[in-house]
Length: 99
Image (cartoon, rainbow, N blue to C red; front, top):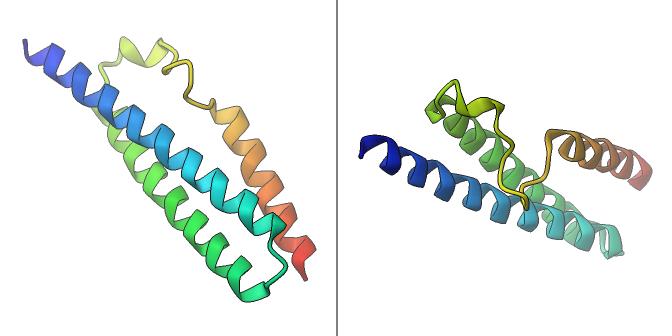
């Protein structure tokens, strides 16, 4: 029973991470379309905040998972690490192009 509760908790954490990743992407996309520099900076800071939250939560998820479960893929809607790295690369390109 304990294992089922743990799995349910991890599932909820994964869902929250997915929601926060979507929110981060939304802020970045809005910042790309905003011409006001102050508003753009505010949006990018909010996106960075959500990125930190996701990283912390992902660390908790990884520590809670059973070593046998780590080989399983996350929920289908969950972005892979590869796509997150692409987002980070385009995000830093975007920041450097602002100046």
